[in-house]
Image (cartoon, rainbow, N blue to C red; front, side, top):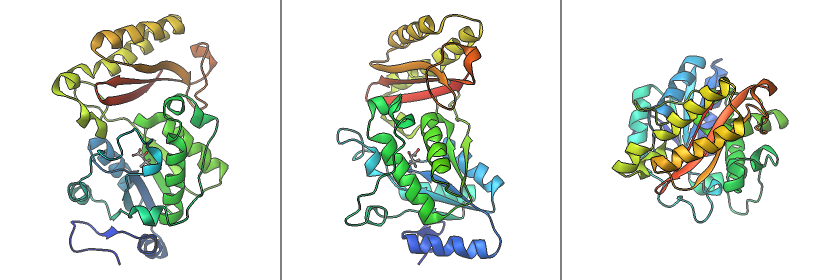
Length: 287
Ligand code: PAF
């Protein structure tokens, strides 16, 4: 049964309850949007909720910290979790249902099935987090099968994730329209992320250099400067600003994410990932 009492918006904990609610809405001719999240909600998530509310009739927000997209050495155990606060934010935003299944509902005993997008998922983030996109593709496929939304939205901050999701939705003919929502930034340009909570005050003050550097590279690339030199310059800038390991700063084709020789070769996206203290920050911009 959907819980309408203890939290400020109805909560479904099982596939059956989520489906029953969505089926009831669909029977009334309503279009259903899904905003998948891992909780620790910030204004970036809420902007996706607002876009769903504008694009559809009913908005389901899922909250599930997905174990299969974390490697054993990553931050699954300490990932911020506060369902009551998240539920309050979603109720205030006007969401209609929180779908917050237990791990056993998502990964039932004996489960073994995975969804992978081998080429797109092996690039960039995939090189540094080889488990990541199979975990994401698997859980998002499950969410689509469980909630059966007409429409779903994912933040462009995780740009490669968005491309991977669009790829498998097309490849598997999943009847969901997938949209990307623009990255929401703090006043100083830092992309909002649940993992920004890991930054110390000094690291937080230094972190906007990531967006500043991407913006400068994009401008200079448009001005015709050589991409290889710009990428090297960007790594120097980030190191100088206090970033530790810089996993990549790279200009790619906006859909295939293959390296671009120059800007005339197609729509371009500049993407970066770098460590600031314990936080691995990622960001990207259109060029
Ligand atoms: O972007 C996220 O928060 C997660 O990767 C997602 C899409 C909810 C899947 O767990």
